[in-house]
Image 1 (spheres, rainbow, N blue to C red):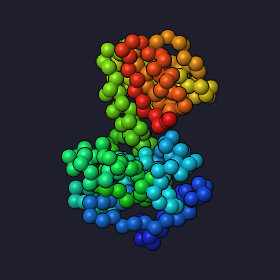
Image 2 (spheres, rainbow, N blue to C red; image 1 turned 90 degrees about the vertical axis):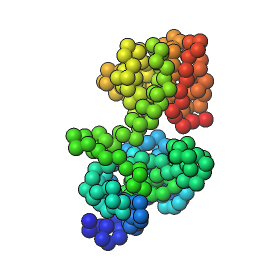
Image 3 (cartoon, rainbow, N blue to C red; image 1 turned 60 degrees about the horizontal axis):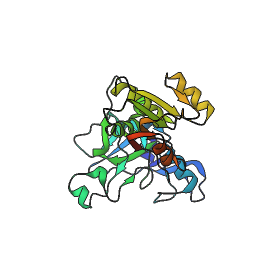
Amino acid sequence: MTSVAMGQMRAILLGRDLKLSLGTAEVRRPEAGEVLVRVEYCGICGSDRHAIASGDWIEYWPAILGHEAVGVVEESVDPAIRIGERVVIDSRRPCGQCALCRRGARGLCESLTWMGESAPGGYAEYVVVPSWTLHRIPDRLQSEVAVLAEPLAVVDSTLDHLPATAGTVRILGGGHIGVLAALRVAQRFAGVEVEIVEVVPGRVGLVRQLSVDAVQHSSGSRVDAVIDAAGYVRSVDDAFAGLTNGGTVIAIALGE
C-alpha cells in the first residue's frame, strides 16, 4: 500500500506521439460506488495494439490502456465489495444516460466506451473502476488463468448465436479469440468439426499443439458456419464465400 499512500503508481503510458513509456501516474481515490483494484495481470488485446498504433478511441492523454484485467480489491466505497477480494473487471463503460442504458441494457449503450480508452485501464499498478463491473474469482482459479475471462466472455456470447444444427465450423484467425472459440465450440457442441485458418506459420503450429485443426489456407470446402476472428480486409467476403446455403457468418473481429 506504500505507493497508494504516496498517491503515485507505476504505469505504462501511451503519449500523443503514440510512443509507450514506463512512467508514473496519480492514484485516484475511489468515490461512491467505486473500488480501487491492485492489478495482478492484464492481457494484451488486438484492440490495444490497434489503439497503440493509431490512437483511435482514446479520449485522454497520456493514456493507460488495458481492459483484460484481474486483481485484488484494495479500497472499496461499496459495502457489497470487500477489501481483499480477487476480481476480474468488466471492461465496458456505458454512458448510463441513453434510452438503452435507462432500460437496463448497458451492453447495448449508444455511446459505449471501454476501460483504458475512455478512462485509465489495467496497464498500471492500480485502477479505479465502478463496483458493478467486478466479478469475483473462485479461490480454485489462478489469476493468470482468470485474466482470460474477458476474451472468453466475448467468445461465449458469440457462440450463443451459433446454430445448434451446424456440423462444420471454420474460424478465420488463430489468435487467442480464434483459439478460444475453437476450444469452446468443441466443448459446447458435440461432434462439430472445427477448422482454424491462420496465415502465420508459427501460430498454426501453436494451435495444433492444442489438438485443434489449423491450416494456412482454407480447404475450399463449404461449411455450415464461419466465425471471423481475424478482421483483415475482405475477411467477411471470404467468410460468406465459404458457406453452404443457409449458413451463418458471425463476426467477432474489429475490421473494415
